[in-house]
Length: 568
Ligand code: TEU
Ligand code: CA
Image 1 (cartoon, protein in one colour):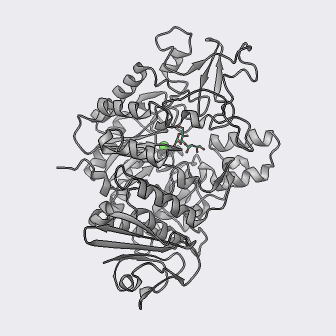
Image 2: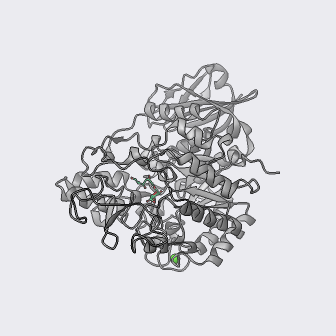
Image 3: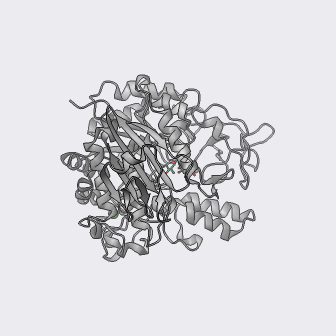
């Protein structure tokens, strides 16, 4: 019988379908492309695939704007393709988790088309409608109900003349926020989720699910360098969030057999709240994605306000999450995803000399933490950020809108471009690099976003049979989690918290102990003076990557980006 918490020993692989594999040559990845590449995932050994959205969508935000939850977008295929993907994945022992985007729909969803028609249609209260600021007629500059900006630039409010009201959109104006205070909305969402589970999918990654319960609608503070106020504190982790998640759990998951996965994406969530949402006793979610470690290189102006990242700060943050969810709740572990820069370019060193070893060291550190690790497509190959030039090279609406808004207001375009190149979401969205053929084997046509020019060096075909590859190393850390209960279930103790080069921690379960030491710098001969050094230096080496002597002669001394897992 499968355990309720089976996901503690599982690894999840995220597919961004648009960029994974194109089977029909139109330049856009599709479900057939995924089906054709299932061997890659089976070879890697992952347990679960999380598919970014494949529902019908106008693609304003690449599918995070859904116009029909019940259908597959023709760009990606058909419902029959989806059924086949689920069946074939299952036959490889791989589960399929769908993205669930229900903080908002597309403005082209039938629910919204009805809701916007007038003030007393049956779905009039399904979205968040507000009157203009007192003293205004509406539609004129400054008449919006409050000063909130959207995550994708501009006001978070859009005027609807037919109702004489504004609707709220925390993301683009084509992504109106649903009104979760309305029980009919909630029941419609739960019914839709039940239909997908009945169809055979294995759970959901829930998009910005901590934004569904709004606290208030007051003007917010204007961050430095930005033009609009932030409503974030008023919409994140609101007063009814746990209640809504528990109601969803009861309506969708409670009566189903074990084997499903729920993970809530929660920007701004705190350790204490995450423990509440993921405490099994609370019957809400299995785990959440927190954002603290991917915000450490941002200043008060938000994600485009670049700051250097210190390793000690990263360790303090991830260590706090490990400690905070030790007794109740569970962590999700990730370095990157479709919204973040590439892990090796951000936390490692993507220069030719260190790219492979730093990608391996990062993989070891992440996967040996307590929690469920997520591999983002291409991370298992050490894929890097893209060498973007001008604004015309970018596709993502977040980057493009931000550039035009702040440059229009007088910001230096070169400085804005520098931030986009470092943090822009397109870095993670360039096509998957399968081989060294034209377009990296992603498509026979013209890809929707340019392939990274380094595909001749970095691709799956070159790595699959190479025991020294990032791919082989990823396979090894995944296998280790499956084989060793200390990795899946052991406790976690951070070591050497102050050092700026070595990431070290210990895992324990009953009498068994694992030590993880990694030199996350390109310096050579870096000592790792962990407690009980002599005993560890003589211990069994479970996994090693990178150059250097490692553990010997009563010492642990690490070469550039060297990583070791030792067992006693
Ligand atoms: O992302 C929400 C989120 O909080 C951010 O990561 C966001 O994408 C942005 O980078 C803020 O600066 C989720 C999805 O993962 C993202 O792709 C969607 O665009 C967004 O929600 C809206 O659905
Ligand atoms: Ca296609």
